[in-house]
Image (cartoon, rainbow, N blue to C red; front, side, top):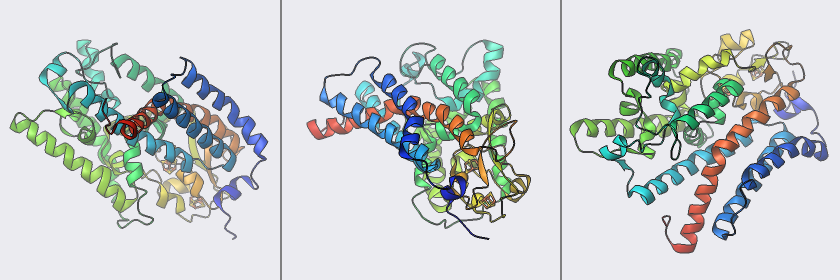
Length: 391
Ligand code: SF4
Ligand code: SF4
């Protein structure tokens, strides 16, 4: 059987540029409106990041439409967003507080930006106590609780667990590290490990309901290492800090490099496990046309979140944990695997299904990432012009 390139297998020849432009233009106009709606600053240190961000978004979306490749261009934005988030977040903290460390006073006054990772742990306590067990503000300030909940509900309804590849500004860190090596050094990870996030989810939800504290954030979140953490003033906080640092180094940096997989998302994250259930109610999924599939296993090898195995491929489906990143779609040499709208025949007009998914998915990526990328570019301009990242 002949093996075609993935894009050729899916679409044959590329569409004419004008057709791709027509498909991309509504999105490009929408982005321009979002970026310029409030008026553009005349300060070149703000204007340059804004123009560069707009150019980047437009080029990536056009390339995604024109080439038929999804993951390649999604990953550029997703990874950039994550690293820019870290740079922007840390520099903002140092500018405002003078340090990444949280004080008791910051927590008592609700000065902590709300993080989506804690959402599953807040639901039972909220039902019983009518409070959110997080030291953040409901309405005020950066990343307040109400805004983050509204964004999360929107992304979940539109994308299901696609949130983890199109919205989560932490996921891009390990996605980035997982692409550093061309071939994995560590291939075999026992199938049973992929159930661990569900166990962590159950344990953390119960523990949080019992203690009325966000237990995952306090003990297990690797991303504390690159955001904010409690100042080390006791043995308990020292142990917590060592846990965050070790989990970040192991699951976000070292294992992704060795395995070419997103190991924090696939083997620990309780938010990801929680989000997997939303795939059941979401209109989009990834399906395999069994008539075209040759069982070559390429999609299983490239899936970063352990969401495909021989059984799921034989059934023409992904596992529940699929984040709709599109990597398997890009990689399949037969064009057998595609984005799919539930209720339609598998493999029917796959490009139309992909575009229907891409508009909301890329929009959420832009909503989450634009400020972070602009913010990081601003810091870089600041560094070049003043010699310091901090104002
Ligand atoms: S769907 Fe997966 S197993 Fe089937 S041909 Fe494509 S890459 Fe190979
Ligand atoms: S099954 Fe495909 S789309 Fe889903 S997470 Fe794996 S590579 Fe991404």
